[in-house]
Length: 261
Image 1 (cartoon, one colour):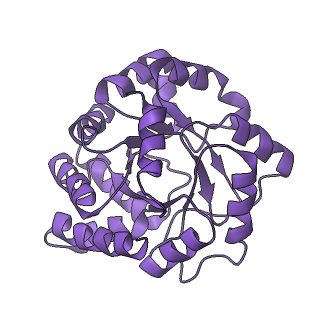
Image 2 (tube, rainbow, N blue to C red):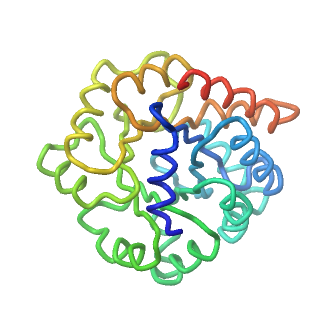
């Protein structure tokens, strides 16, 4: 089954609730442990996984995810290692890899997409690749059956949002706030309008990310119309702090899953 269809099925199978997509930093705290954490996500109720590739200059990442990526790089994690994590998890759940465009360009667009396909990835998120420059990668992803997932922000103008939404694959990653990833005490007052604008621009599901760190915030996002909820820094922080990262994150994912039931 191709990636866009696997993603569509994951959202459809959520059956009246928002799909739950936890973020996993590949290689953190080790490559093997990140596989255990990913499996714990699925056991806890994850519908999809966003799999991050550590990078030296992660412009969209807040301090928690940045620190995890730095530790993974310091331990020697490579892009090939993260593909191995994807290969281990993709039979169980759709995996959407998140990485920065230099990693794609240094390998070469066709070659990188071939690697995604071989690893069983369903989608790809490239936060520093503008819509206007995404044509060659989108074409390669379409040919390989990989969903190139776009991001939109509260500041995205309506005309640009319409163009992005019309060309979206898999889902639209809707950023709840301006700024980097990280837990917030409260979601922005405007996030409901961000979701509504994104949903009006596209036929694919809309998932909300950045700043969702508590089950009640996940519920709030779902009630505002989000088709999916992405949880990142809260889970990465739990993995960093726990003696048994997989057990800790599974308990948290179960809590988020229950909040979306």
